[in-house]
Image 1: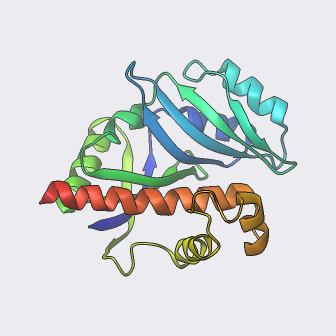
Image 2: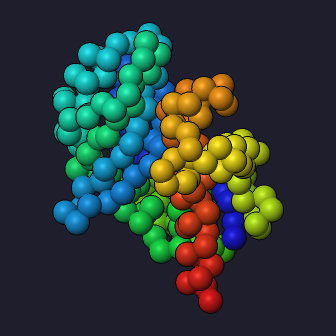
Length: 212
């Protein structure tokens, strides 16, 4: 199993367009492709130097995006689900035996992805598809992972505390709000960390099972 970090400069991307227009970082927490070919993404927009209204206006104006349904907001950021009608990179990411942990916009029209792939062949296939679509791709980091280094120290620590306090019990021994307070983090950070850790564990299990 490989964990890799890619930086991609695509020919087109709604996230790059809006990020550059408003000078705001955008973090794509997760994405899923619908049966109609659209992509639903949980995204976070940092509001440094702009407003929630400006972000919503640009989303409504962009030809590839639909309304953002906000699930959480603060003075610093808004988070919610957005539907994308057209995303060049989305198709490449639907490859078998590949899982994107997260993505974020960088400066100069670049998107950075952190992902899991079963092997070198899958990773090379992704890079080949992106380049064929006209994107510039650079591999920034790659490492072989196993059960002992699959999760980050933060993810492991949060999962351990959640298990210890009965978060996964039924009924729950602690609420998400209480757990976040005990850990000294926001609820959005807690849910994102738990979600990424759990999905990484499940995806890794299923990827290995498919490999036989």
